[in-house]
Image (cartoon, rainbow, N blue to C red; front, side, top):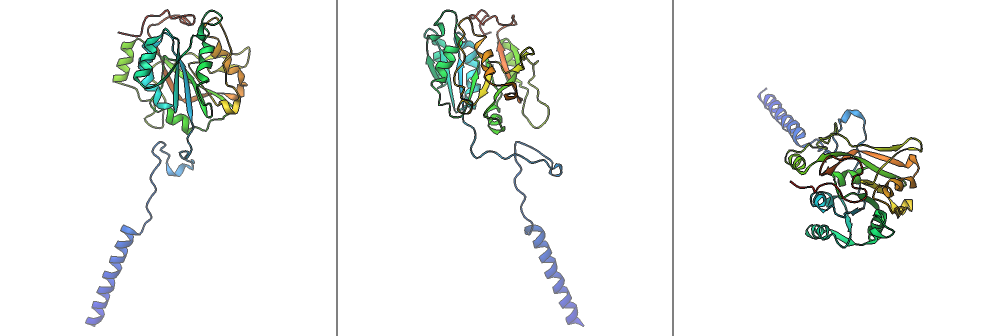
Length: 287
């Protein structure tokens, strides 16, 4: 009888040890969650994976007498692109110095003034001629600051190479307000949820007599190799028309807004629309 008792005790101990081992070491390890998208397991939503071949994105930016804005926007924007080219004229040494400081390629041309007026298209096309154009290209204004996760988001999105894209903007008036924002920023992309820039949205441009909305020139993104669009249309009278005509290279079904991003349009003061389209008239962006 004593032998039977001890046999049962030993069997119980062996089973207890085996169960403990299975609990601690026997379960498969859970995969690491995707850090940029938090989706509950029971929703059935397919979580997109990060691409093994991220998009190549180049950018061109015209900056003539806008160096006071560029000094603030260039360090925020350069990180998002594989290559960024800034185009200025021979007299704007301030812009050239800022580009040199931040190690950004700056190309100089006076073709802006061929034909009279200010031909922004000539400057844009001069800069485009320096790019590889074998991936995506962004045309960006010098007074636009992009949020910190712009590059990551653009490379993550499933964009159509036969389309052109734009984003919304919010206006920030005065350097003092911009500094306050940078000291206490509103995080656009902290998690999945509402997107809010901290400022009122700027206007969108649409022509209902034609075919509706177009992405205007402060941010235009397209794929030259797929669309075969590699030049901006020439317009000799100011800086406002060429980038407004450019999106009409695409039908409305191929012009899209990227709602995941809102950029910041820096302005030195509140002023009438288009005040600088034919030369800089607003005061400098400084304290």
